[in-house]
Image 1 (tube, rainbow, N blue to C red):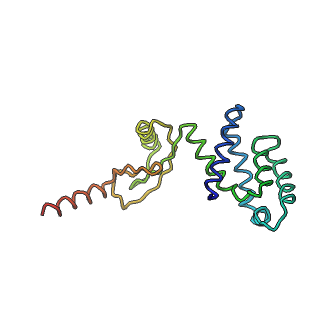
Image 2 (image 1 turned 90 degrees about the vertical axis):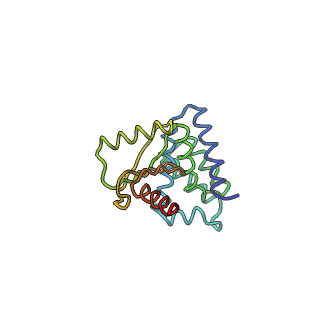
Length: 182
């Protein structure tokens, strides 16, 4: 089983426990991020914790110290200790990503990447967010970028769905139709 699939099982179980025990799932996300950030900021720590040559008891001791400071007596602490005991700490980065995706799905929030030819005003950005929320039936968080190559209009990507209202695409579609006719 891939690490992503294993991480998905743990993330699903963690979110289920958090919701069942009525714990703030966003606080749990922050705790997971704090632990994952330690791996990112301290690559030597990560190397030790995922190294199969390091005894599980040593990894457990290190994780016990870390979670004691970052997330004491929480489902995150229990999960981290379980991962240490099973020598599965390598899953932490994927676990955070999968948990975040499941949490956003639970909260009915989607993320949209919007590309425009020119920068958007705050009013226009809010208007696009509202329109995308109507299309998806979910709350939309949005990041924007500028790409003059699209000439005008916008391209919005939500997950694997692309809403392409760019002038460049419309011109290309017209060009293809003219070539087919002529």
